[in-house]
Length: 118
Image (cartoon, rainbow, N blue to C red; front, side, top):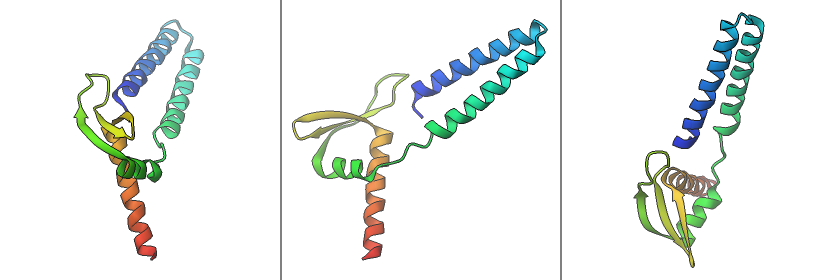
């Protein structure tokens, strides 16, 4: 998960905690617990859905065969992931280091599996 997503997840969690706290302090215990349960279900749903993005070996094949790595591990500041700069034909693409490495690894693993089948 990117640092920006982590930051926003933290802020959302903090807002829910403040809402629950205000309801509980106001004596509205049932509403406070309902909001807390909703926040818990929302958090679990968020983690299950958005954490498991499928890694596409075709993207790794594209990076490995059609692109040339120009710069690696470019620092983009505190709230953004480091990137790699690729030249793909006439186009310059900036890809996060993590996504680039995952795509290349998926492509290499798919080649290993194909070689085992042959």
